[in-house]
Image 1 (tube, rainbow over the protein chains, first blue to last red):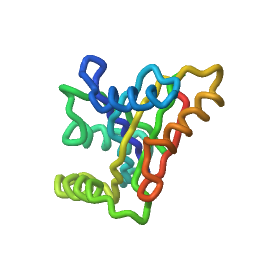
Image 2: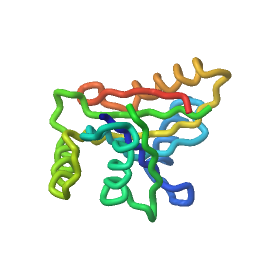
Image 3: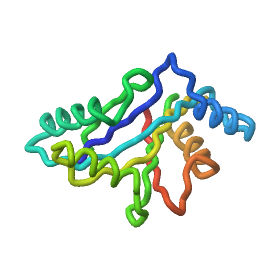
Length: 78
Length: 78
């Protein structure tokens, strides 16, 4: 089962990559008001059902994939 | 309107971060068979409707956000 993990910097954290992308796009006439830049992972897990797969990936995320001080994450079944 | 952009290395490209994450998880008893690591962006665009927003972000992606030689991307309306 494949699970997607979206990781973004928290709202209160300065996202310098995001600001750079926003400014680059704006200075090239794109109508962008904000952009946040983070990580995306697709993980193939061995699980019986969606719930078990999500639970496993949640454990992985909390174990090593994201930094709770500076980031938030979201899971999705693919 | 907010659009999410998922960027992952192409299948035929060696994804060294993904391999490292896979091995780290496996050596900590997680049942993972594969993991790909990429980027995730959330872009707030000024557009009248979903179709226009997606079209704009597609132009941005092709202009500067991803590298077509090594990466694939996917858009989603949030």
